[in-house]
Amino acid sequence: MFRKTLILTLLIALLAACAPAQTAPEVDSAPTEVVSAEAASTEAASEADAYLVTSDGLGREVTLAEPAQRVVSLAPSITEILFAVGAGDQVVGRDEFSDYPAEAASIDSVGGSMGEYSVEAIVALEPNLVLAAEINTPELVNQLEDLGLTVFYVNNPTTIEEMYGSLENVAALTGHDVTELIDSLKDRVAAVDEKIAPISARPSVFYEIDASDPTKPWTYGPNSFGNLLIERAGGFNIASDATDPYPQLSLEQIVVANPSIILLGDSMWGVTPNSVLTREGWETIAAVQNNQIFPIDDNLISRPGPRLVDGLEALAKILHPGVFP
Image (cartoon, rainbow, N blue to C red; front, side):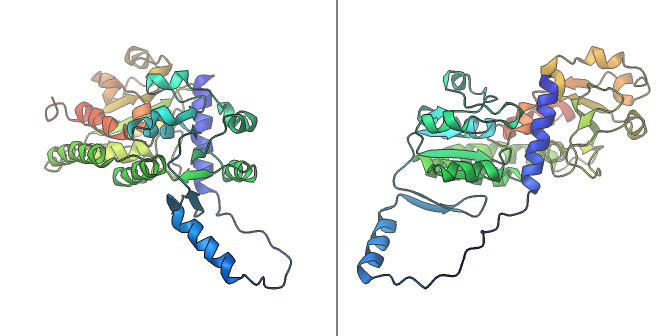
């Protein structure tokens, strides 16, 4: 059941990312309002006094009078970012799947299982900022805004470099400086890039997200974090030319692609390398014949936060053990 929830969560994130931009509702024509000089001056003063005025991932202007001290996170990646930038103590609510760092478990949950959030629980926490991600729908954002809450929508990054921007946005909203954190992450990524650059041989990789049906397991396709990290770590993703970011590959497709390495993102659900060795029809695959099957923490790959760099390093060590001892 947990694996089905994971797949549904991924698909919800994909649908949210592909959702069309929201358009403003039509309104009846009305006479132009005349604003007095005094009112205009008051509005300008109000903006000048604002701590932060910025645009979010939906193109909406978000204004804060001061750094947010009561924050609700609606996605595991956002929770991880909040703690990474030093705002963990400011988090008063988090989604059901936020399990990292360990301290997150003690924070009140506002739901999120099967995409269902408790709006009542969110409002009751009296947050002065709600942080949403692409796993959340624009409709949920609008609903929370209609209730008078300030919501900032964080787009999924398409590169590791764009992830730094997410850190900067969340840090600014909560009043923290992340210069040192980002410099550290950049140095670690550069160290991987430097060692990968001269390598010409890229092992073929099948990354398994869910094999509830071992004849048609789910994997990472193009425009996914898995594909991004596999390629940057010096591998070739056999599903990189699929038409879906999270496709199912048939056993026949996997056998024909004949990956030299199999990565088990579903190891967190109990799938082991030994169990793959016993799958009917998989015995001809090079990775199975050579026992090149490795478990990996999928949270390092699927959550667009600072631990993407941990995922990159973990993949690089698996794909090129001679280069990354």
